[in-house]
Amino acid sequence: MPGDDTQSRIQALAELVVRFGANVQPGQIVAISSEPGKEPLARAIAEAAYAAGAKFVDLSVFDIHIKHARMLHAAPETLGFVPPWYGERMRALGEHRCAVIALTGPVAPRIMDGIDPALLGRDLLPRVRESIEIVNQRTANWTAAPCPTKGWAELVHPQRRPGEALERLWVEVSHICRVDERDPVAAWETRMDGLVAVAGKLDALNLDALRFDGPGTKLTVGLLPSSRWQCARISTVDGIVHAPNLPTEEVFTTPDPERVDGHVCSTKPLFVSGALVTGLRVRFEHGRAVEIDADQGADVLRTLSHRDPGASRLGEIALVDRESRIGSLETVFFDTLLDENAASHIALGEGLDFTVGDEDKPRINRSELHIDFMIGSNDVTVTGIEAGGGEVPLLRGGVWRI
Image (cartoon, rainbow, N blue to C red; front, side, top):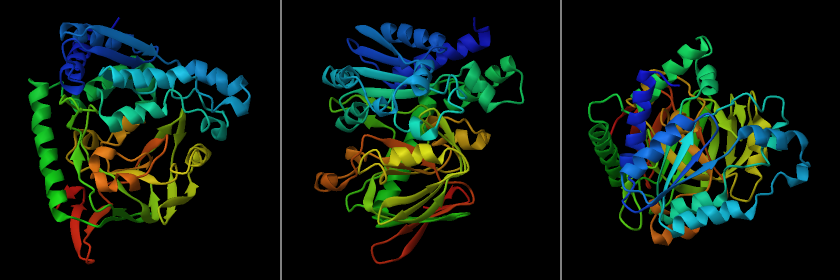
């Protein structure tokens, strides 16, 4: 059983997830996706959701050990198969205007060691395309939040004893999620206000492109004429304001998928499809990733980039300054939800409809994937490029210059 300190953190995080992250409304169905080992937080979220007036809480559990068995024994040609009811369930969540909550963080981060990376790239579960569709259609108020587990803690803090590692991870997650504040919701509203202000300044610049320069990186990313910057204060089509990521520290938009050129070196490890990718290096030509290399795990991303025509093009670009609580810890979490909010990043795959005008929606990238990887650091400068070629410094040393 969790200790008193951990139990209080679980309760505080559950309340924040329900009342601020997903912003569960009275009478809503609440869908929670979890894994074995995350039961205490999942149960606390269910209790908080019912206390907030939920009509029904539905729990879906995905076991990475069963995925591992599939990797070991299933015929390779079957690994791309996804039962149709996975997609039907996600569509139903949108149709019924449900609140959707996902718990992130690897439970068994080393379980796929030794599995052929090319095989791992074929099986996307528990990810399904319909998840991206309800995000773009904005039919569900949703959020994703980290859930510390023993296996994850030992990956992040291998130098500590198991119990100490888990305690340390809970302390860090509580801090970056601001549940260590007297009023976590008020703290988040203040942070969101700041991010909205940054997004507004970027919009006012009316930039044509962004350029990233740093060690191993010289990358230019074009923007669409109607690309607009957002933070993770999103409203559903029914007007429910929610925060899709807890924590969140980014401002983001959808780039022009045909105007990405140069090379980029990832500044943090990427954990995708159960595999760890380190030392990632990608070269783009005319928007497409034409070379993908890495110190470890390159074949996973190479396989994923061939999943469909849009899987090798960009669907998102996000900027993060060094003032984020995640970045200031200097902890590598090996979880994209957290690590992407410590550093500027780009995403291969599906674009975000709500960040562009109707006139540009036919031009944004389409894919069943959306894979973020981190490319920012204090050593990477970010420069805005105006339509006439003028340059505007955006981030220098991780600090906003706008």
